[in-house]
Image (cartoon, rainbow, N blue to C red; front, side, top):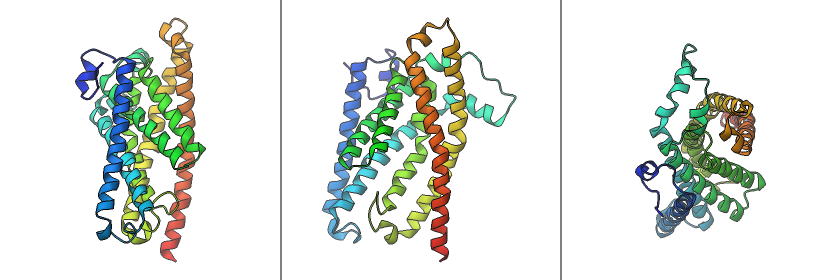
Length: 289
């Protein structure tokens, strides 16, 4: 049984076994714990010389360690690997900018092809969701966060086993996490979910993070997400309608499940966009007051 560390581990022997994948997931979960606790111990060591918002408050240091050591670390990793493999998505990009570009109506390669780079992204993403699930329970984030981590992790597993839409995983579990990276940094400035007093202590950084998040969210989640979703949902619809496709019959539950998860999350993107505009207006009003 091999620990899947490099891309070659996903390439040489084809799709890795489930046991190898779970071994690697455990490795990454441990790595997230180590990164988070290393950051926490570093902050504790230097706490006497830190800004007053961190110095007396162990809770604030724990929150920052969670958001940076686990969340930012996980999102940066999968988004970097997604960008590294974005050439697999070049046809969707070309089609977006030119209607003359033709995309093969045959869905088989897009739904059933095994892509080693995507398998690696999905493996790390699944590990991140396991760690997220643990954190959400420990920190009492709420049922909506727990449900999100379970659904997102389930979609990642379905992308690997039995294997559905590997090429799409590069975007949804990789590239699109760019916006989440900025979000988990911005979350530190929230008095309820983040470090209490941080926004007041560093207002400039908060504004920069907020602007960066809005730009990344609109680009990744409002523009690119629905565009790529359209092709995946269309491929799923065609696969389910093809009575001669044995793989589609065998993976029907996963096709329907991933389609449902994707449709639900796509709707949420636009609801969140409305919240962003409302919150943005409130912040502008505060600045002008």
